[in-house]
Length: 115
Length: 111
Image (tube, each protein chain N blue to C red):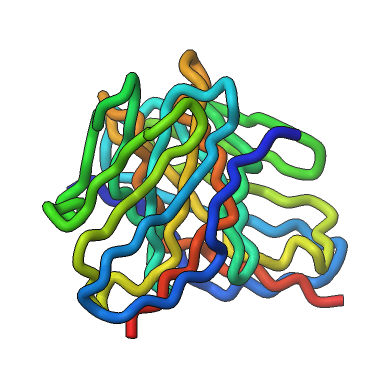
């Protein structure tokens, strides 16, 4: 079964450094998402992306964050200057258009640890 | 702020029993409802979705939706220890396709 893949599985970064998290969505999916989950807390929406542009973003997704689809397969999340509170699991998800377009398929996540 | 509420649990059931997980949501305009399973340290995995009032069955799982009362539930029949996980209810607000996730209910199925 096709799946969303994310790299790296674990990223350790010094506070203030830039980090790029990578995702390869399912190939026939057209909507892409980033979520985060701080340990023990809810899954929180960050941003959605469709047709090469951001379609929706949350208040968490401030100027420190950016997303890009640099080629036909990768979808990246960049955090420009990381803070301690950015430590979390970051999940990429994708979905198809149509009646089930809200059924999102998640990757295994990247655990981001900020020191 | 659109809310999705779940009892955090843990809900403990013996193997073979029916586990009943409940979720309430605040937005009357919501049209679709999703249940995800999340094992510890893993990503959410979609297990059921429901759009219409009533019951929807898939194997050992049954989703139940009552829009008038704004609740959605998940029943797991013949619970197995491998069902032990956190179950997340996810509900997009009306007019949005972005789900709001509940905190999840921790289910423990003991042999």
